Image 1: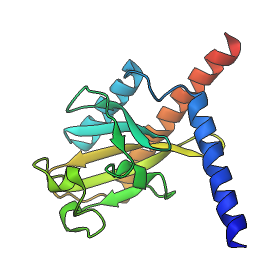
Image 2 (image 1 turned 180 degrees about the horizontal axis):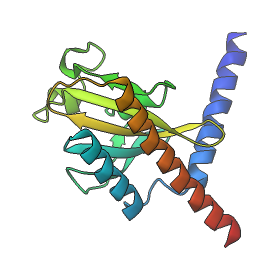
Image 3 (image 1 turned 90 degrees about the vertical axis):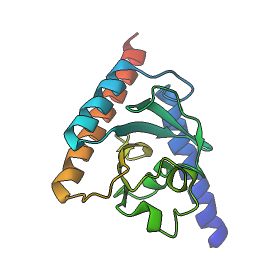
Image 4 (image 1 turned 90 degrees about the horizontal axis):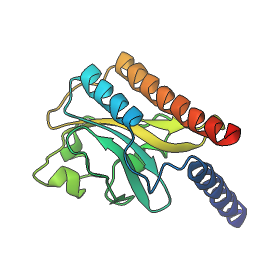
Length: 172
């Protein structure tokens, strides 16, 4: 029974990765539409850091960053965003530095000193979590239910942009 469950998990992950690869979002440069959405997200939440990430098997690909325009190549072991796609609810860490699960994370323990992180998954129409929209702050802050709704709106907008990309491929 355990072997069958493991096989189903592997098959589901292969399907998720296959869908992600069809969008041509990883191994690519930042794009204006995602950058604009990240800027809007940072403005809505009054934070300096908003990120749109896509998660493959081994890495987290940041399409944009408000604080830095560099492409990111965080591994799934160092990125909090890889945790956010595991759960349908995303991730919310209001006290990052005191979370036992995250204390050793380089982004939290380093001079960057993240204190707040909130994310919602970016899902495909088929329900695969392929990435996350997240906000980060160096200050502790509350994350209210209507804040989650706003972040989910951004993730839905990202999905619509992804779908436009697929439609262009089909009709090109």
